Amino acid sequence: MPNSWFQFKYFRVEQDQCAMKVNTDSVLLGAIVPVENIKTAVDLGSGTGLLSLMLAQRGKIRVHAIEQDKDAALQCAYNFMKSPWPHLLESMWADVHGCRKIFENQFDLAICNPPYFENQLESVTENRNNARHGNAANSIQNWFETAFQITNEQGKAAFILPYSELENWSKKAKEIGWNVSEIIQVKPNINKPHKRAILLLQKSQTNLITKEITIETDLRGEYTAEFQELVKDFYL
Image (cartoon, rainbow, N blue to C red; front, side):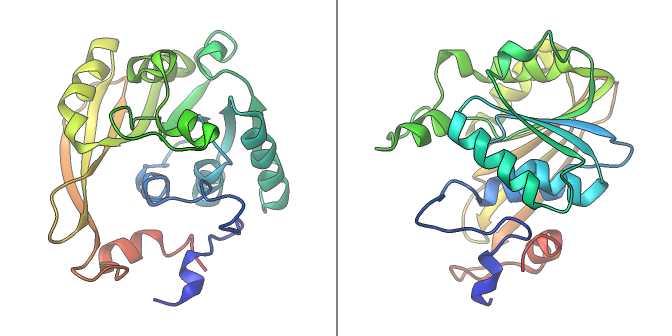
């Protein structure tokens, strides 16, 4: 795979300045989430705007990105301005969960790569800690509740989470009122167990579909054909 593989379309990465900008979890989520009949979306905890850009590229969707870290929100706004879709994208610096009333019942889709590394070692960088570990105010239940409140009657949501928490998170989502429509189990490579899961939710009744995707072959940095096909439109 050529080095240009790591340059995201419309979202150039300078590793020494913005290591949090592009990660496999978000790329996978943004590429997999269904966008058919989706006209408006909200990117909860948007960081610097990766998921929002992917939605705009895939479906010409109007996306409202909400991020509580000021620097990330400013970088997000800049990335939107430099993209081909500034008319579709809006960055907002605000507390995600504090916006429930403002945006109640407004969006077709809520998408989120939430902070879930709660039991792992913390980073020396405060901003990265906030994004990865979260706190009591950023519990997964809050993310599910916020997504539920700000989506419309036919609303949908997409989350990526640790595979080990799949059963617990699915239960919490159902308690709030979500129906689980699809679970995509993610293996980092063909020789390792599932590490992530993508949880697709909707308010209307649905039958559960379960799928699987593997990111790498048995060689580090060698991506499977299915993964390359999935994300080919997003990398240079």
